[in-house]
Length: 181
Ligand SMILES: [Zn+2]
Image 1 (cartoon, rainbow, N blue to C red):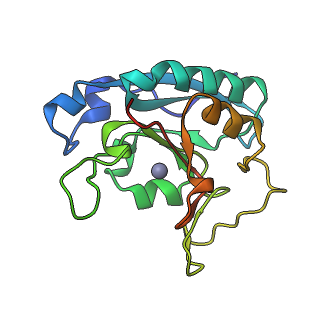
Image 2 (image 1 turned 180 degrees about the horizontal axis):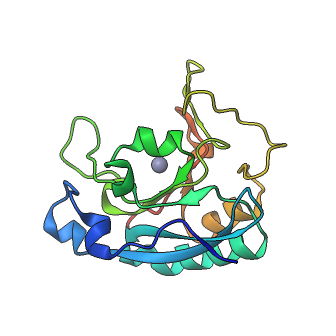
Protein backbone atom coordinates (compact mmCIF):
# COMPACT_ATOMS: atom_id res chain seq x y z
CA UNK A 1 0.00 0.00 0.00
CA UNK A 2 1.24 3.45 -0.94
CA UNK A 3 1.52 5.88 1.96
CA UNK A 4 0.98 9.48 0.87
CA UNK A 5 3.22 11.97 2.71
CA UNK A 6 2.33 14.91 0.48
CA UNK A 7 -0.34 15.57 -2.12
CA UNK A 8 -0.80 19.34 -2.45
CA UNK A 9 -1.27 21.61 -5.47
CA UNK A 10 1.45 23.82 -6.97
CA UNK A 11 -0.40 26.90 -5.66
CA UNK A 12 -0.38 25.44 -2.14
CA UNK A 13 3.31 24.51 -2.43
CA UNK A 14 4.39 28.08 -3.30
CA UNK A 15 1.94 29.87 -0.98
CA UNK A 16 3.78 32.51 1.01
CA UNK A 17 7.12 31.99 -0.75
CA UNK A 18 9.17 35.19 -0.51
CA UNK A 19 10.58 34.68 -4.02
CA UNK A 20 10.23 37.03 -7.02
CA UNK A 21 7.63 35.99 -9.61
CA UNK A 22 10.13 34.90 -12.28
CA UNK A 23 11.61 32.39 -9.85
CA UNK A 24 8.22 31.00 -8.80
CA UNK A 25 7.31 30.73 -12.50
CA UNK A 26 10.37 28.54 -13.17
CA UNK A 27 9.47 25.99 -10.47
CA UNK A 28 7.57 22.73 -10.86
CA UNK A 29 6.08 20.32 -8.34
CA UNK A 30 6.84 16.66 -8.96
CA UNK A 31 5.59 13.47 -7.30
CA UNK A 32 8.29 11.07 -6.10
CA UNK A 33 8.10 7.56 -4.69
CA UNK A 34 10.49 6.07 -2.13
CA UNK A 35 10.73 3.34 0.48
CA UNK A 36 10.82 4.95 3.89
CA UNK A 37 12.35 3.66 7.13
CA UNK A 38 9.09 1.78 7.85
CA UNK A 39 9.75 -0.43 4.78
CA UNK A 40 6.62 0.94 3.07
CA UNK A 41 6.42 2.66 -0.29
CA UNK A 42 5.64 6.36 0.12
CA UNK A 43 4.67 9.23 -2.15
CA UNK A 44 6.01 12.70 -1.55
CA UNK A 45 6.45 15.91 -3.52
CA UNK A 46 9.39 18.11 -4.42
CA UNK A 47 9.33 21.72 -5.51
CA UNK A 48 12.28 22.17 -7.87
CA UNK A 49 13.53 24.26 -10.78
CA UNK A 50 11.97 22.90 -13.98
CA UNK A 51 15.44 22.47 -15.54
CA UNK A 52 16.32 19.86 -12.89
CA UNK A 53 13.10 17.79 -13.18
CA UNK A 54 14.55 15.18 -15.53
CA UNK A 55 17.58 14.60 -13.29
CA UNK A 56 15.57 14.48 -10.08
CA UNK A 57 13.01 12.03 -11.50
CA UNK A 58 15.79 9.74 -12.75
CA UNK A 59 17.58 9.92 -9.39
CA UNK A 60 14.37 9.11 -7.51
CA UNK A 61 13.76 6.18 -9.86
CA UNK A 62 17.15 4.85 -8.70
CA UNK A 63 16.31 5.61 -5.05
CA UNK A 64 13.07 3.64 -5.36
CA UNK A 65 14.65 0.75 -7.28
CA UNK A 66 17.57 0.33 -4.87
CA UNK A 67 15.29 0.90 -1.84
CA UNK A 68 17.62 3.58 -0.50
CA UNK A 69 15.40 4.71 2.39
CA UNK A 70 14.13 8.30 2.48
CA UNK A 71 12.28 9.49 5.59
CA UNK A 72 9.76 11.82 3.92
CA UNK A 73 9.55 14.34 1.07
CA UNK A 74 7.27 17.27 1.87
CA UNK A 75 7.40 20.81 0.40
CA UNK A 76 8.80 23.19 2.99
CA UNK A 77 5.64 25.35 3.00
CA UNK A 78 4.32 22.66 5.40
CA UNK A 79 7.10 23.71 7.80
CA UNK A 80 6.21 27.42 7.47
CA UNK A 81 9.32 27.83 5.25
CA UNK A 82 11.62 26.96 8.14
CA UNK A 83 14.64 24.95 7.03
CA UNK A 84 15.43 24.28 10.68
CA UNK A 85 12.03 22.75 11.48
CA UNK A 86 12.07 20.72 8.25
CA UNK A 87 15.57 19.38 9.01
CA UNK A 88 14.63 18.49 12.59
CA UNK A 89 11.79 16.38 11.11
CA UNK A 90 14.32 14.62 8.83
CA UNK A 91 12.47 15.97 5.80
CA UNK A 92 13.90 15.84 2.28
CA UNK A 93 13.23 19.07 0.36
CA UNK A 94 14.43 21.36 -2.40
CA UNK A 95 13.11 24.89 -3.03
CA UNK A 96 13.21 27.38 -0.18
CA UNK A 97 13.76 31.00 -1.15
CA UNK A 98 16.81 32.59 0.42
CA UNK A 99 19.67 34.77 -0.72
CA UNK A 100 23.39 34.19 -0.30
CA UNK A 101 24.59 35.95 2.85
CA UNK A 102 25.66 39.53 2.15
CA UNK A 103 24.15 39.59 -1.37
CA UNK A 104 20.72 39.71 -2.98
CA UNK A 105 21.54 36.73 -5.18
CA UNK A 106 19.36 33.68 -4.57
CA UNK A 107 21.11 30.55 -3.26
CA UNK A 108 20.74 27.22 -5.04
CA UNK A 109 17.81 26.37 -2.75
CA UNK A 110 16.45 29.82 -3.57
CA UNK A 111 16.05 28.86 -7.24
CA UNK A 112 15.05 25.22 -6.66
CA UNK A 113 18.41 23.91 -7.89
CA UNK A 114 19.40 22.24 -4.61
CA UNK A 115 18.08 19.21 -2.79
CA UNK A 116 18.62 18.06 0.81
CA UNK A 117 18.25 14.33 1.55
CA UNK A 118 17.68 12.76 5.00
CA UNK A 119 19.34 15.51 7.09
CA UNK A 120 19.27 13.35 10.20
CA UNK A 121 21.40 10.59 8.65
CA UNK A 122 23.39 13.18 6.66
CA UNK A 123 23.90 16.23 8.86
CA UNK A 124 25.95 19.30 8.15
CA UNK A 125 29.19 19.29 10.15
CA UNK A 126 30.93 22.65 10.53
CA UNK A 127 34.69 23.03 10.81
CA UNK A 128 34.35 23.70 14.55
CA UNK A 129 32.55 20.35 14.98
CA UNK A 130 29.04 21.77 15.36
CA UNK A 131 26.39 19.44 13.87
CA UNK A 132 22.96 20.32 12.44
CA UNK A 133 20.25 19.15 12.92
CA UNK A 134 20.89 18.88 16.65
CA UNK A 135 21.38 15.32 17.81
CA UNK A 136 22.14 13.98 14.32
CA UNK A 137 24.96 11.50 13.83
CA UNK A 138 26.84 10.75 10.61
CA UNK A 139 27.47 7.01 10.71
CA UNK A 140 27.94 5.04 7.48
CA UNK A 141 26.43 1.95 9.12
CA UNK A 142 23.04 3.68 9.36
CA UNK A 143 20.56 3.13 6.52
CA UNK A 144 19.82 6.22 4.46
CA UNK A 145 23.36 7.59 4.83
CA UNK A 146 25.15 9.10 1.84
CA UNK A 147 28.85 8.62 1.17
CA UNK A 148 31.17 9.26 -1.74
CA UNK A 149 30.78 5.88 -3.43
CA UNK A 150 27.08 5.36 -2.71
CA UNK A 151 24.93 4.86 -5.83
CA UNK A 152 22.78 7.93 -5.08
CA UNK A 153 25.81 10.23 -4.76
CA UNK A 154 27.37 8.74 -7.88
CA UNK A 155 24.16 9.30 -9.86
CA UNK A 156 23.98 12.97 -8.83
CA UNK A 157 27.67 13.53 -9.68
CA UNK A 158 27.32 11.81 -13.07
CA UNK A 159 24.60 14.34 -13.87
CA UNK A 160 26.79 17.34 -13.03
CA UNK A 161 25.50 17.97 -9.53
CA UNK A 162 27.79 18.94 -6.64
CA UNK A 163 27.59 17.10 -3.32
CA UNK A 164 28.02 19.01 -0.05
CA UNK A 165 29.90 16.02 1.41
CA UNK A 166 32.84 17.13 -0.76
CA UNK A 167 32.76 20.82 0.22
CA UNK A 168 36.02 22.21 1.61
CA UNK A 169 34.77 24.56 4.31
CA UNK A 170 32.14 22.31 5.89
CA UNK A 171 30.67 18.88 5.29
CA UNK A 172 27.06 19.27 4.16
CA UNK A 173 26.25 15.59 3.70
CA UNK A 174 22.55 16.02 2.87
CA UNK A 175 23.05 18.74 0.25
CA UNK A 176 23.18 18.45 -3.55
CA UNK A 177 23.13 21.37 -5.99
CA UNK A 178 22.98 21.73 -9.75
CA UNK A 179 24.89 24.83 -10.89
CA UNK A 180 23.24 26.73 -13.73
CA UNK A 181 24.97 26.04 -17.05
ZN1 LIG B 1 20.99 22.19 1.06
